[in-house]
Amino acid sequence: MSTRLYEHPIFLEHVTPAGHPERPDRVRAINVALGHPNFARLDRKEAPLASEEAVLLAHPEDHLRAVMRHIPEEDGEINQIEADTYASPKSLQAALTGVGAAMAAVDDVFTGQADNVFVAARPPGHHAEKTTAMGFCFFNNAAIAARHAQKRHGAERVAIVDWDVHHGNGTQDIFWDDRSVLFCSTHQMPLYPGTGAKDETGKHGTIVNAPLSPNVGSEQFREAFKSRVLPALSDFRPDLIIISAGFDAHHRDPLAQINLVGEDFDWATGRLLEIADKSASNRVVSLLEGGYDLEGLAESAGLHVLRLMKG
Image (cartoon, rainbow, N blue to C red; front, side):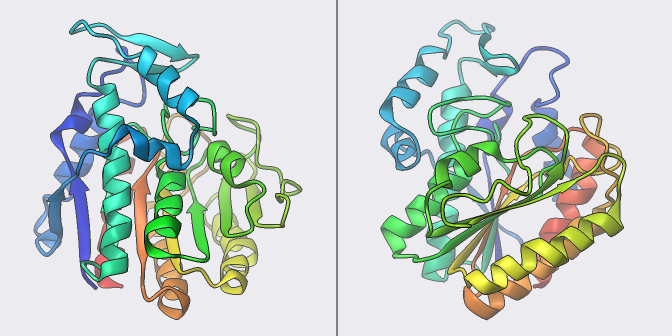
C-alpha cells in the first residue's frame, strides 16, 4: 500500500495555556515515532493551507467569522473561545492548514496519488459542530473532507469512523439529516460531551453509536466494532472511509477510562482497510483527533500508520 503523511511546523505553533492537554508536544511525539526506520517508505508531504472559504463546506460563514474574531494579534497572547478551547496568533493558520491537509488527502486517494493518507494535524476537529467551536476544535476537518469528496470527486457515499474516546458530537451534528454520509462512533459514555447514545441514529439511520462503559478494554471495544460499526459499513458500501483517529482510548490516557492498547488501533485499522478494499478502491483518509498521553499517543499512532502502510 502507498501511504502519504501530511505534516507541517505550523501545527506546533497553535499554543494553548500551560497544562492544557491539547499541546504542541502531541505532534512532536508523533513526529518522533514516525521517524523510526519502519516508516522510511512513508510519502511525506507538507500540508497545504486551505482558503477560508473551504471552511464553508461544513460551516456557515458566521461560524468562520466568530472563530476569526477570537484570534489574538499580539505574540504570546491566548484567547479563550469557550470552556476549554483556546486560540493563539497562529491558531487560525494551523486550523486552516489542517483543513487543507484533509482536503488534499481526499484528492490524493481519489486521483491515485496514494492508497491512504494520515494527517498529523492539530487542533483536532470532531467536536466542532456546524455553528460551535468546542472541545479543543475550531473546524470539523472530517466533515469538510467528506463534503470535499462529494463536491470535487463525486463521492456518493462517505463513511466517517470515529474511535476517539470522546463522542464526535460535531460530526454527528453536521450529518444528522444526511443520508449520503454514514457516521460511526465508539466512545466512552458517560463522558464529555455527553452525546452518543445508541438511540441517536439520525434522520435516516446513518448515525451509528457504540458507547462503551468506563473501565472496559480491548474485548468490549472489538465487540462493539464487530457488532455495530463493521456491519453498518458493509451495508453502506462507502466510496471513501474517513477515520477520526483519536488515540485517547489508550489505557495511559488521562482524560478517560477506556483501557485499549496500541494493538487495538492496529486491529481496527485493519478491519477498515478490509472494508475499503471491497467498496472504496482502498481509499482511506485518517485525521488525527485526540490522544493526550504522549507515550500512548506515539505507540498507537505508530501502529495505526504502520497498518495503513501494510494494508
